[in-house]
Image (tube, rainbow, N blue to C red):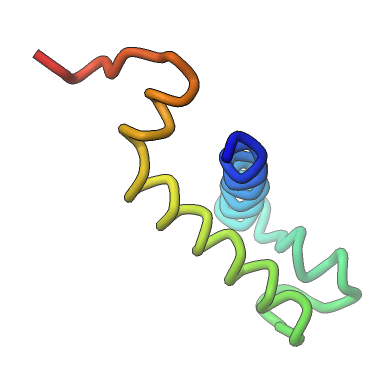
Length: 78
């Protein structure tokens, strides 16, 4: 499961960097990697966006179990 945790984290970083570039520079890195213009999509770029979204859902739903697997104490527990 740690491999999935790492993959999800990497995809979330990619998604976060892409959104940061969209906000600050009006540059869509994912679209550019697939030879598309800003705001354009293809099947491959939509797959990347879907994987990033699925990673966010996975991380949100399994945060406590991920912390237990990695031996990290939750900061918000009382």
